[in-house]
View 1 (cartoon, rainbow, N blue to C red):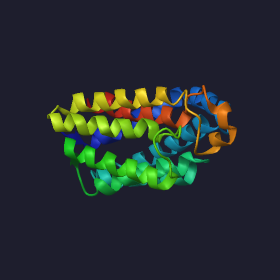
View 2 (view 1 turned 90 degrees about the horizontal axis):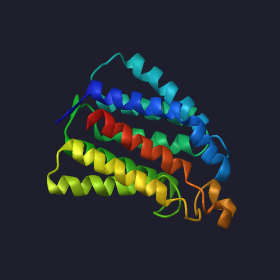
View 3 (view 1 turned 45 degrees about the vertical axis):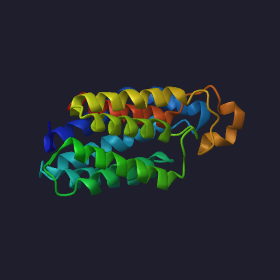
View 4 (view 1 turned 90 degrees about the vertical axis):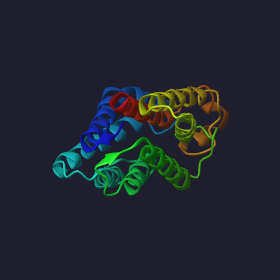
Amino acid sequence: MTVSYDDAVAFVRAFAGVVAERKDELTALDSAIGDADHGINMNRGMQAALEVVDAAQGDGDIGAMFKAVGMKLVSTVGGAGGPLYGTLFLQLGVKSAGKAELAPADWLEMLSAAVDGVIARGKAELEDKTMIDALVPALEALKAKAAEGADMGDALRASADAAEQGRDATTPLEARRGRASYLGPRSVGHQDPGATSSALLLRAAASRWG
């Protein structure tokens, strides 16, 4: 199975759609341990990203499309989400530069670079109660499925499942990075909004490409 340019655009649209649908939930999560703006900011950024995608008019370069989305997120999403999600999409673009279609190995390389980029940008580690707690398990599940020779659909679904498990596992954690870390023990018992939106991202990929 391969992912075409149109498939890649459909993934961006799916992520933008689910962020719009669940922006109030994301903001409510952020109100408990952050600045109460994650859903609002992400929705604004992804809607702006759709305008960029439309303006590209299907030129066929998946990498250029992802880079454009990343740049738009950096410039339009406030708070920590802008730099982090911008980095994620920029790295997806770097590793798919000039490609008109993606093989499963390409997505694995892209997601690996994206996760590394987010880690470098945010300086977070596993169990810091951030989006890393969803992204790293998703990447590890994808690697494991690739090693087994699983088809892309199975690998993507396993990756999304792992992201959701990682998201859920943030609830009992005490935040050690970001705005939530200022709350100390009071951050325990709250699901991390960044991990939640990251799980939505991986599920969007699975739903469109699986």
